[in-house]
Length: 255
Ligand SMILES: [Fe+2]
Image (tube, rainbow, N blue to C red):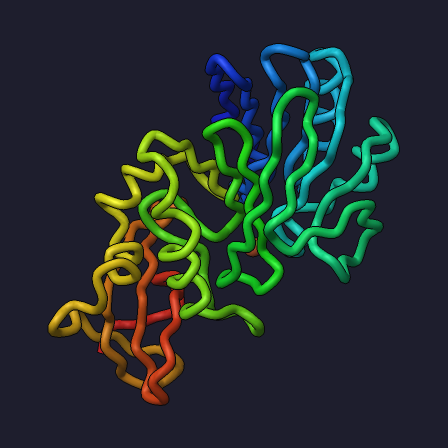
C-alpha cells in the first residue's frame, strides 16, 4: 500500500494531519483544534488503524466524522472508524452508510469553540460538499492543486464545477488553505493565479482552443490543459453537443 507523504501542518487555530490513504493518493485527515484539543476526522477512505491511532494519540475527543462526497475511496473505512471512536457522521444525504447529520451546503456545525461551515461544491459529483474550518477548506475532489477532479462520471457536471469556482471561492482570502481529496494542498491565491480551469471559470474561454485530441472516437478541441496530482494531466474538452468535460489525459489520444 502507498503510505508515503503524510504531513502535519500546524497554525494558531488548528493542526491538520494529512494521511495519504491508498494507491489513488486519496487524502484522509485528522484535524485538531489547537485551543481545546477537539478533533474531527475527514474522509476516512482507508488506513482506519492509522486514523484511529492518530486521533487517540491526540486525546480522542472526536466531535465529528466528515465525508466530502460519496465516492468509495473517501469513506470505505468509515465503519471501522465510527466503531472505534463513536463520533457522529456528517455527509451528503442518501449515502450508502449511516449519516447522523445530512448536509447539502449552507449549514454550520459546532466544533468546540470553532465553527465548521459547509459549502455545496458540486461538479465532480452532485452531492459534493466542502468543510471550512478556520481558514482551511477541505474540498474533496472539487479541486486538485492547479487542476480539478474529473467530470466524466455519470452524474458529474463541468458547468456546475465552474459555477462553484465563481460562487464559492471569490469571497475567500488568498491565504485560505485548500485541502484536496487527492495530492498536495493549495491556497485560494495560488489557484486564482495559476489554475487553468479556474481561469476559464472566472474569465471565460480563450479565443481559440489550445489543442485538439481524440476523445471517445471523435476529435474535439481542448479548451485548457492542467497538471494532475498523479503526474499526468487533465484536459477540459468541448464536446460536439456543446457540453464540456474534464478528463484525465489517459482518456484521450493524439489525432
Ligand atoms: Fe471522487
